[in-house]
Image (cartoon, rainbow, N blue to C red):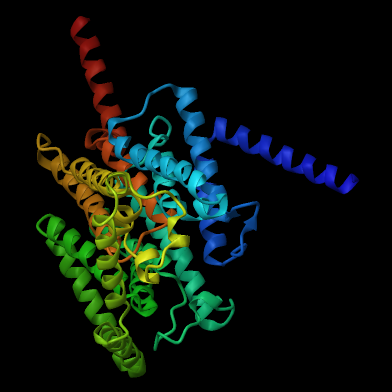
Length: 453
């Protein structure tokens, strides 16, 4: 009895402390929630969840905390909701509607388990978009945050390769010739960190061996993880970054290429087996992609079956999707129920309205990440480079979401991209050149006083 009362008091105190942090430091609350939830999920702590009529997992609690934080920020600052957040709000409304319909047709557990994929993707993005009044984020800071996140998950991968951390059971299968130490969602974070690190080297001109070594490590880990979809998405983002910044920093790009070639030659001379291991990873990945048991073939079959099911359904299900929980009572194949694609998954579970909402969301993000056309000279180059990073990260994620439905980190990345893009190039330039502006204003005031005298 006393122990139960003590646990309730501790839980109440922790809840009050969280509310205080959310009210006064909402950005820190969101950052801590996403970081802790991602790390626990990556380490598979609490992977079994808690059964309270519906299975509750760490990501579910994190999403509820994020939505609560966004709501309190909205109440405190009264800035209203941006029109750009409407597609994300529409997805959340479709999720709530599907869940309520599922409660009437199926059990709470089946309906709750059905809406989790979209919740963990859309809730972090919406919560971060609501932080716009209090969150200041330029492209340089976004790149540094992305790079540090990649370093953290690279450390987890390295510890698992060395045996210091146990390999999760979910990654121990017989389908892969090369063991994967991180799931694809976390491997993709490492790939985007590589894009951000190269941006810091090329555009922000980070000096010292630390950033060069860090970028090299991120590239090696991205390759060694063996996720073909991560390879393609990262390569596409890097290609876009090079295309947009190549004319602005050709010498830096040539220097990066020369450094990579020299490092590769040194590795070949020092230990030729490393190059052979890299070649084996690539060849194995390509062989698996062309085999009869390819996961891509399995995914495409699921896409086809799910799309046919949507087109053959009732009008209301085609429009807003079937009630949540229908998949537990469906005789469809595993690939057509557990759909590995954010686009097809949204279409199958939330109908044409859901698919339209997510496409409009990406169109809004593309529009916001474009460079303002009226900036000139050096400021124009800076703005173009900043936009290049945002577009590269967004382009890579849009490609990654073709074979994967994404999770809390991918949703959070979209929210951060929007925050950085909508704060404007002039504001970012003002932060960068604040000391210059201060000196110029001081000279203007001094000149004005002298003229009056």
